[in-house]
Every structure is written in C-alpha cells, then in structure tokens.
Length: 284
Length: 305
Image (tube, rainbow over all chains, first blue to last red; front, top):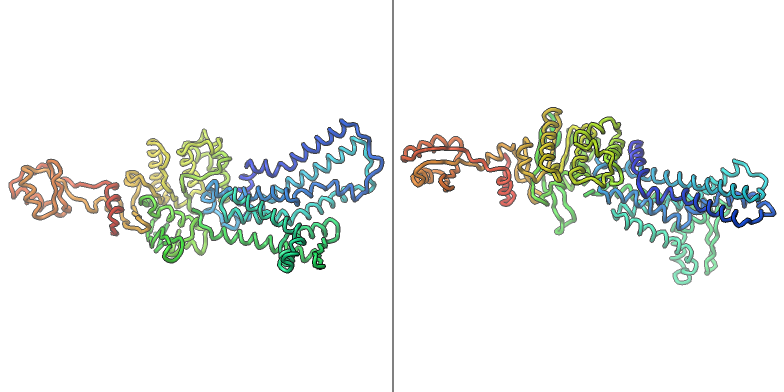
C-alpha cells in the first residue's frame, strides 16, 4: 500500500492539475490577500476604533475553511479527483500499473494522495489567510481582541477543517465513482458538477418543492446528504444544528450523530461502489 | 520443469445470450521456462484480449489461467514476476521517461537502481530526462521494453514489440529478446504481426483466428507442415508424367513442385531415373511463415502438431 501511495504521490506532484486545482488555493490566497492589503493601505483607511469580539476575530482568522465546503470549493475538489481517477483511462496507464499492485490498493492510494494534497493546500491557504489578516491588522494599527492564543487559533482552524471534511470527502467519492464508471475525465467532472449542483439546489428548494410532493420531498430531504452537510457544519462551528421548517408545518432538525451517520453512509457507499466496480472492470 | 504459463480453455465473451461476442474461445496453451513463444493472428483475432487476461487487466469469462503454477483467480501475486509491454507502451505524458520508470518501480515496490541501466539498454540514456509526450512512437516502444524489464521478471509479455521501430530498432529488439531467453533464462511470450520476426525469434508459435486457436507447434514443425519438394529434371514433361501418378505435382516454371515427404525422396528419384529423366536437383520447398499463417487463418484450418 505504501508503495502505491509513494508512486501516486510522485505522479500527482508533477501533474499540471495539481498546480491549477490544488496549489491554486494557497497561491490564490496569497495573491488576493496581498492585493487587498496593499489596496487598503494605499487608501489610508484609519484603524478600527474598537477591537472585534474574540469569537468574531477567530472566525475571520479561519474563514478560508468556508471555501472547501462551499459549492465552488467542492466543484474544484470534484474536478481534481475526477482528473486523478479518470486520467489513468485517458493516458491508458492502468495497463502499466494494474498488473503490479492489487486494484484496491491503487484506488486507496489515489484517494489518500489526492485528499492529502488537497488538505495540505487547504491548511497552507488557511494559515496564509490567517497570517495576512493579522499582518493587515498590524499594518493598519487595528486593535486586536483580548484572549488570542495559539491554542484558540488552532482550535478555530481545526473546527474549520472538520466542518469541510464531510463535503470534501463526499465530492471526492462522487468524482471517483463517476470517473470509474465513465472512464473519461470530462464526463467525470461534468457528472460531479451536476450532482453537486443538484444536491445544493434540492437542499435550497426542498421546502418549496414539498408543496407539490410533500411526502417524497421530505423523505428525500432526510435521505440525501445536502441537508446533513449543512447540519454537521452547524453543529461543528456553532454548536447547534440546522432546523428547516417545511410549509406543511413539519420541521426537520437532526442531531449531529444522525447527520454524521447519513453522510458517512453516502461516502462509504459511493467509495465502496468505486472499489467494487474498479475491482471487476475490464481494462481494454 | 513447471510451465511458466498455462492457459486451459480460456474464454472471453462480451454481452450475453445471442448477442454475445466471443472474443476468445477455449484457448489452451503451455509455455515453458526460457522459451520464446509467439502468438500470431490477424487483427481482431483475440491476441490482445488474451494478453490482457494474462495480465489481469480483463477477467476471463471461462477457463483457467496459471502463472508459475498458481491460478490468477486465487492470487494476483504471480503477476509480480511478469513484465509487460501492451499497446506500444502507455506512459504518463507529463513525466519524463525516467520518472515514468520511477513511478513503475515504486508501484512494484522496487528501487531505482536499474533505471539508468535499462534506459541505456534500450537506447534512451540521453532522452530519459525528456517528457514522454515528446517521444516518438519508437522511443515509447523502447521505454515500454525498459518498463517490462524493470522488475527483473521471469516472464515477459510483449504485445507487438517491434511496432514503431525502424529496421535497426527491430534488429536490436530481436537480439535483446533472444538474449533474454538464452542468456538470462527469461520466458518471453510475444504477439506480432511481423511474421518474419516471429520466424527468427520464437521457439514455438500459436496461431489464433476469430478467437480460436487453430495451431500450436514448434516453428520448424509449422514450416515443415504442408511442405514439399522442388524437382528440377529434364525433360520436364517426362518427369511430370513419372511423378504425377504418385504425388500431387504442379509445374513451376522449368521445375516441378511435388507434394512429397522426406521419406518419399528415394522413391521419387528412382521413378525419375526409371522414366529416363535427368535429375538436376531435388530440394525441399519450405513455405515461409507468412504463407503458412495466411493459409491457416484464411482457411480456418485446425491442427495441433
């Protein structure tokens, strides 16, 4: 398994997609925040008169973590994982490596390396955003709230990372399965984008749709992962879940354990399908 | 000695029922250690499908496949003793030739020590640092051979190894393949449409047509199969009359082609002399592999020597 992991890492480190879809996060964060700081300093804005609340400052320090769990961030994850998996079909390179390593270990290595690269980039970007925000405060002379400690900052980032994980893992599972089923990069990316967009649209419009098909829509709302991803984020970041009222008077509000089980089941199920399908697939 | 490779009734079908396409039907063969075995067939005959089943890329629909005495269905580990070149070498285009071999070495759990030697062996020492997307077909093919040899395998499976190579490259490939068997004791299983190459390289050959194996024998036996004698004797008309009564005979310019065996030759000469013909030459006519191959694949002949 470690050999497959090491081979995958060597391969992906040098792939252009890793630069455009992974390292783009810290590079983009560095450029955007640097430009924002320069613009603010050049405008000569006065320092804020009062220090923000500690919680607000910490949330702002870790606000990068909103990107990986957003629709846009998840689409980037989908595109990258789609390329990682479908690329082997496009380059015809499964024939090079499949005879030398068990198929499950090759798939596991792809998941592990792509997610590790993504999270290395996310962590780097989050810390850069944090650092540049603090430099901005220093440069402008903004007062900082009392109680900022390395531990508090680390906890804010840890919470952000934890809240991003379910969405990122689900997106990776969708993209990998789409790549294995379609064997083409473009189809894998398009399917991934469509599925994620539909999931988000349904989550947003389910209460309105329930006016037409109340039972089915409510059941789908409970069973699909969209609501549960938001609910888990709420539990992790705010300590409380999301309660969604439906027009028929019903309200949906799950505990974190239930939502974790639903999202976990989706991720596990889709990933298991990828392993199973690839294990039986003819590589022509 | 234990066979390196055994196929027993190996089959592959796509689809089910009446619409099923049978790509490979009941192919059985055995390849021994240090043997160079040729696998011949026209396009679409099932050669590549068979090779992909050998490499665990395609699941057989039926039959059994044993590598080094172990069935692949139970355990894919025998494949670690196999090196392969399929489809002319498939590599990551964004990596250099050397990095591609490094990816493969890591996948196999092996070190990088042999990479430079192998690149030199296949004539890519200078180009090993270039990205594969800039390689010619022949360079990819040579890199594919290096990849096949990387794990120091006991069995090397080569699908059309001479594709894309120029005359000198083909000659080098031929020397390399023979040396693998003769000097290093490797077993080589190769498919090729270059029948001349197979004739010079292989110890034994199997011919497959429309998914079915129609012949397996030593090359020498295959070429002797269905051969005859070319007789030069005068007057030709007298010689033809003397021989045609006993063997199928046809005129070929000033000579006669007689469908006789080696054991028939003394009788053949006696008949000519007895008929008053002057015998100038009696020589075996061997069809080349191409002629044998074409006659078999076109007629669908089935025989096992």
